[in-house]
Image 1: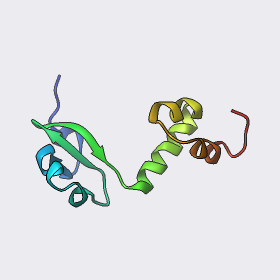
Image 2: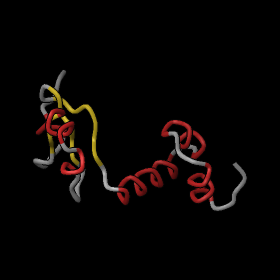
Image 3: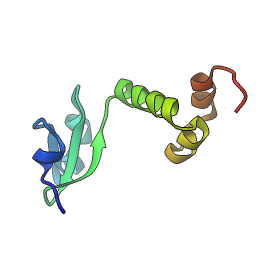
Length: 87
């Protein structure tokens, strides 16, 4: 069951993989941007603030150590999230 980009992302915030490869810095916006190839998302561009918020929220519902490992985050991130608690 494939979904089009418009079904997956409610806004028009998407760029093709070719557009992204020609000028990645120009593709970032204030909202998430889907990078698409053949009409399907291959990745998403997020602002640093949104990425930090999402990782923090993930750590609230999932083991922060697992989140750190899955996303290859730093020990400093883990210490900040757990606030000195034993992990």
